[in-house]
Length: 567
Image (cartoon, rainbow, N blue to C red; front, side, top):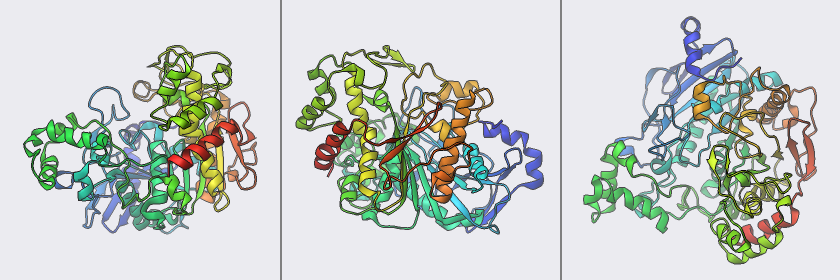
């Protein structure tokens, strides 16, 4: 059985590690990892890939480590980067958090080294809305995914990273724009990709075969990297797995009222208030000098990816795709059936209320009116799909939901605008140029560790993609809802689906073709250019479907909303 808590693994393996501790030397020094013979793997955890972004380096572009660090002990995950939340539950709860957080982890099969034939690399960017999360999260335990690659006969090396979040990583405002200090978390990710290019060969990895994988915010980050710097190909990766995260909507504007207000709040509500009428340089110097606790107390507000005319130069990723300014990479992309239930505003009881609730998702009123005509007020065809007239109870999955007669209608629209439409646009736009495999996750997990999950919502595929074998511990239950574990007590059909999905992901990362998964019973997953289809993942027999569900509505969303409003 795999173990979720690497700390426990380290304790049990201390004696073996002392005797056979793996060691890798890179330009900056020597990295001592840990041998985990029960998994047949070696782990190098908490490796710094940038100078600590603290003090004068706070709110600045990440800086490479251009000096020797001697020998480091890489046997424990580094702390998560501070989230944007100061109280309550978030993906960082239960883990160490720090401003000094720019670290990465390398997990490789035993027997791989710089003397071996180089093997492909899978580079994971975690989700969490660019506001929370970290590579130590048990839900991203890569042991099962690396094992899947070995079982395929095509092993991979896994790299998972931390990057700055919230106001420390994605703060806007005129001062940051003028200082060239926008999209810092995105730049962290990119520096980590450069670190892979410079160093992964010493671990036995092939820097010419790097797959970037991300879910939600990780996927939107990948969308940004693909079009960054005007689509310039810096040879950082050649493939992409995007789970529920194809981002086409316009980037933020750093000087917009919402972004500026977050910056202004930091000035006004900290000891930097005395600099309110000072120069931008003085204000930024103050924000870099105040204690991190003071910074974080008032750091909430609008943050995110922004058009900075450097990393991101067009209005949106869609605009870049339309202009041909994108890195040609192979894609494995998809979304989950009922994600509209995870994101839509609730409580609409008539068409006027539904229209108003969609205003932030679909700003042009003419588009809202037309889309509402294409998604009639018929609960039987709304989201969650295939549930008839049944409406979910007000409290589901531990979260309060406002009852509304038109909830299913609004959820169907929001899901198609946010999650189903963007992958279909991307498939139709680029699959004639690059290999493209598309999926729809259509499985309700047998269990999640936080109340009830009776729709196919956001994030539910992640446990299966990683084939998590984590112990169902109290910590897991308390801190990691919307995920399930697939250990020996899980139903056999869920365990097989985890094997199939993880081996397909690993096969794509290693060979560019998910059909190279080593499973006894499998489907032929077609390239989108050969057949515009999805593989539909479910435990009771996965299938292949034509990618034409809700064709009229999604076609309008793509052709009349995306292509007019997102460019």
